[in-house]
Amino acid sequence: MTSPDSNTASTHSPRVVLVGAPGSGKTTVGRLLAKRWQVGFRDTDHDIEHGAGRSVSDIFIERGEAHFRSLERAAVAAALDQHRGVLALGAGAVLSDDTRHLLRRHRVVHMDVGLAAAMKRLDMNRSRPLLVGNVRGRWQELAAERRPLYTEVATLTVQTDGQPAQQVAAAVEAALEEESGHDG
Image (tube, rainbow, N blue to C red; front, side):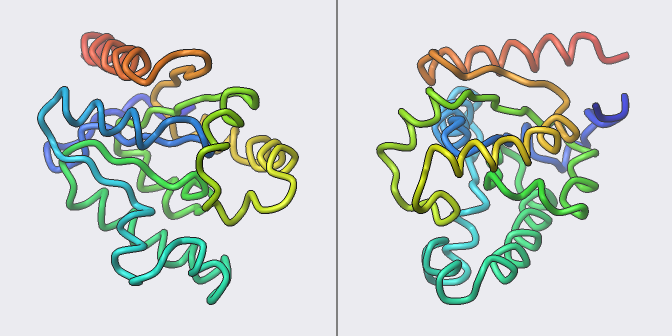
């Protein structure tokens, strides 16, 4: 778990940062939270696509994962510095030591999801380059590899399985309010 001062984000920080496996609901729940709080929503994968002028999948195909991860580190650092609303990170952003270090100063929610729920959500989105081929098997590998990293950076974890996005957003909001009420 992170240090006790990890959730003492400055007023120049995102209100909350969402991390989690593909299909955990980061973007959907992030947009709902931003609307509830009347703040902006930002997704670092979208930032990368906008900056590169091509999709994440195309970046992986044309330039490789190492190049994408370099773009991702820069996009996350910029968003953490500039964005004041709700920020969703790409599922692999936590692989970077630099990114995990930066996240220690922010309120980070791990959107935890199980295989069955993720598969239902991912069935609608085929544009995930690291899940090509055996989607189910590959997702399990990635989730097992990354779950400890999500836990490391998270100030709290919210389970998203079997819940509609509105209910998950309400749970995140309630957990953040409870956490804030327990700060010194």
